[in-house]
Length: 97
Image (cartoon, rainbow, N blue to C red):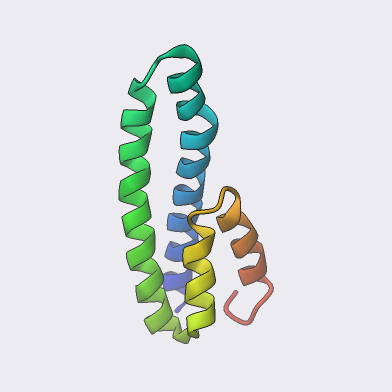
């Protein structure tokens, strides 16, 4: 169980960070400086990490025994900027930590 949550936190951190890089670095470069290449690469990395995060959230839900409420909030957190970090702080305060 500990290894499952450890990997969930690692994947979540990478996914959350890639979302921020996409929104804060790549998108402004594309639309303000007409440099779209960063969106291409960071977007592809983020997309792969997002799919992995969603799959690992399902695995973690089954393995750890999360209720649907935790799984729902984990998925919602993945599409909100800084959402994963807030979710992770709340997760650390529970018995799952």
